[in-house]
Length: 462
Image (cartoon, rainbow, N blue to C red; front, side, top):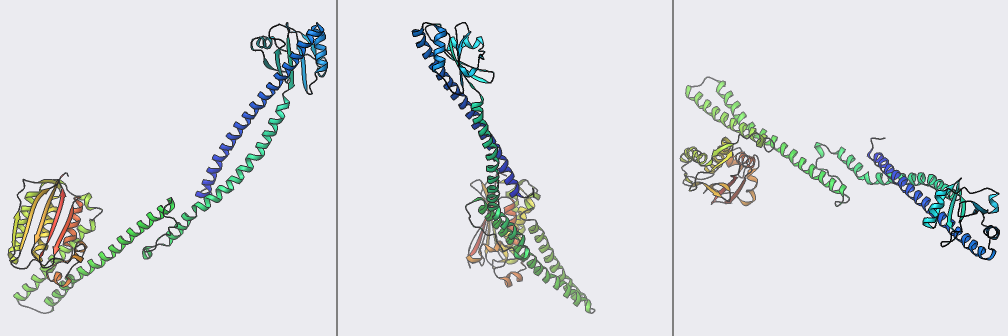
C-alpha cells in the first residue's frame, strides 16, 4: 500500500496538515491564555481601585483607618473575590468576610513595586492578586483584590478539550478529502499507464489521450505521444531499411550465384571463364560497396559523431585530391570536370577519410547523371565563417518533389535508370550522414534537364 503514490501523497498531506493544525492550536491556546490572564489582571486592578477610592472617602468621614476599612469591606462585597486593606507598613487592617479570618500574605517586594508603578500583580496560594496604593499623594496603605486562578483555567481547559476533539476530526476529514483529490488527480496517470501498457511494436501508431494539453499531465502526455511518434518513425525506418537492404543485396547475390552455377555447369573455354569471373568480380565489388555504405549508415546518427577521427585537415588539398580522382570517371564518361578555388588555404578539424568519401560521392553522383559532353564544377570557398563546397553539374536534374527525398536511404528518382548505372540509392544518404556528423548543412538546387547544384557548408571553428 505504501508503494502507491496516492497513499504517499495522502500521508504527506495529512502529516503537513497535522503539524499545521497543532501549531495553529498552540498559537491560539497561548494567545487565549494571555488574553484571559490580561483580562483577569485588568478586572482585579479595576476592582482594587474601586476599593481604594471608597476607602479614601470613608477615611475623610470616619477619621480612622480601621473603622474606614470595616465600613468599606461591609459595603463592598464581590462574589468569588477577596479584598484586603493593608497599611503602609504592610500589615493587614481589614479583610472581606469570605477570607474567613485568613490573611493574604503579600510579599514586601510586591508592595515596593506597587509604590513605584501604582499597581502590581502576584500569585499567592493559588490566588491572583492585584495590589494598588490607596492614594497616590498620601501614604495610606494598599488595597488588594484576589481571585482564584481556576476561574480562567476552566476556560482554557474547555479550549483544550475543544482542540483535542476538533483537531483529529478536522485531520480525518481533510485526509479523506486529500485521498479523494489525490486519486482524482492521479487518475489520468493511471489511464496513461494502462494505455501505454497496451502499446507494443505492432501498435506504435496508438497515442495517449490528452484531455487538457495546457496542464502538467497534458504536457506530459503530449511528450509521451511525441516520443511514440519518434519511435514509430524510427521503427518504420528500420523496417524499410532492412527491407531495402535485403532487396539491394538480393540482386548481386543472385547474379553471383547464377553466374557461378552457369560457369560450373559444364566445361568452358578460358575466355568464357574470364567473362564469368569478370562479371562475378563486378558484382562482388558492387556488393562490397553496398555493405560498406550500410555499415556507415548503421552508425548514423547516434554513433558516427562519436567515432570521428578529428584532426586538422587541409580542405583545399582534400578537394584537389578528390578532383583528381574524379577526373578519371569524368574522362571515361566524356564529361568535363572543372575545379575552382580562389580562396587562401582552408583548414578545419574533421575526419579526412569521411570528407573525401563525401566529396567523391557527390562527384560520382554528378558524373553518373551528366550526359556525355556535359560539365561538372567543383568549387571551394570561404563564406560567413564556413567552408562551402559546391558541386554543380549540367545533368538531368531532379524534380522539385524529389529533391528532399534524394537523401533518404535507397531512394531513387528513376529506379530503373539508377540501377542500370550501378547505384544503390545510398550515396547521398552517406553524404548527409557525414555532413551532419561534422555539424554542417547541405542544400540542393536543381532544375530538370538543366542540372543540379549541391552546396555543403562546414563550420571552420572546429
